Length: 206
Image (cartoon, rainbow, N blue to C red):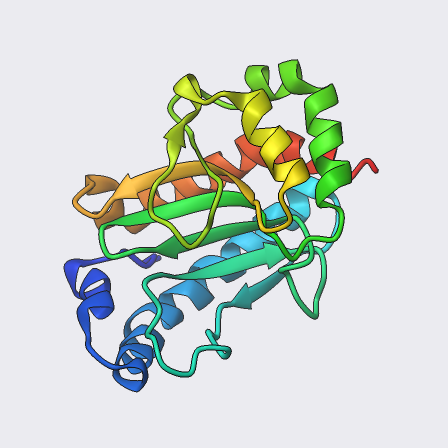
């Protein structure tokens, strides 16, 4: 069985000029791979969590002028959408793949989730590996290694600032050998979300 890999051609999609042209590159090069990876991931997460999880592939429908700098698939418990719910993402910028457990600003339970995480700060420290990274804005490439993150400050910001976000997971550089082997890539994605499932489940205990 052949599993998708991500190649230099895929990452180059983000250097295509023009919204329509870049979207065509994303739709033809990347989204078919997302469909395959996402179907497997949704199935695996459904088994891990004991509930049906649904695949969504970013459409970037709100964009009218500027082409996207990244793209992603999301797996969430809601069939109709993912942005308002804790969800798992796999996606690309032009220089890396990201695998996230994501809490983005559209989530209406942000403050309650932040309070839960602050109350279980030690659990997060014991669950999240040091080499994982945290992003406070899904629109930006930058992320902070968990080993150097001020966890409490990041969660307080997530709680207090309306547009603040909190995403935790892994970055895989575009040149990594993992991305050239479909089985290793899928195994890495599944291992990452499995590690993060206890955090996801903690956030659902509201």
